Length: 301
Image 1 (tube, rainbow, N blue to C red):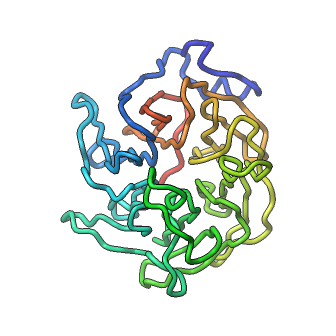
Image 2 (cartoon, rainbow, N blue to C red; image 1 turned 60 degrees about the horizontal axis):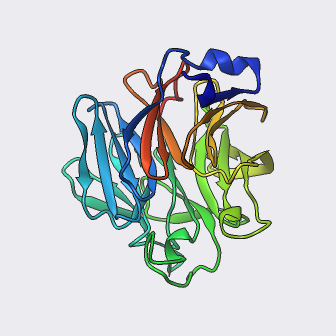
Image 3 (cartoon, helix red, strand yellow; image 1 turned 90 degrees about the vertical axis):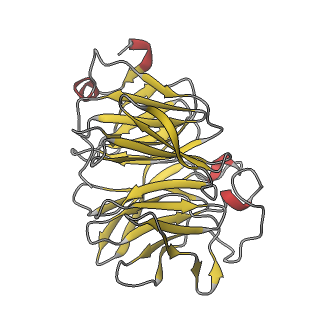
């Protein structure tokens, strides 16, 4: 890596980098790149280009192609435990699953009879439950969805159990909940609040909760992001949190210590670990998709 492409704030961060690995720009023609998800079975990555209402696909040796031409302004994506794509759609204000035969199953579109705002990011727990955030970014304008009023009246975090279509509220005290990630043992859940992107003086931090019996307890601030706002995030095998920020990717130890930064020339929106050994960091940053091999592995999912 070029020394100008990272900052070391703690000596542990050096051991997490591959000094000879280049930061690669894989694609650069998005309007707002988001939601990268890696599929190990096919060794390929899918991500969203929200304003263009499309999803793109990258595979080694094959380059970039269109995965879904009309994605309903898709944002966050993940895989479930059966390797199926789970997607947050701003346009239709829902969370969907793409079955292996290509058909679409709607997992969540309303809470207590009221339409969701614009589901943003999503993760799947080992028990198959689907956890997602629902800020209002997709209904604020027609750029990332369709301008509309919130029927729920606030921005929440929800859970859907695999054997039920019930949408359960798990957190209702965020301003604009955004990215989320479990610790490797799933005893903690990290959730970003990115409200400062649109509201002066609003939160720009990551909170952490204890997880027990499908409920969140003991909320506390994990870190505050001083460069921009936190958006998408992922956790590695050691429990370190890798989060997006204005100046790149920030890496924090489980106790909240800033270990270091990977600096990029664009605002980072989201990231994921991929590659056959989960040691390749894919980064969705404004107009582009980047990748970087690191010396740690992403937590198994």
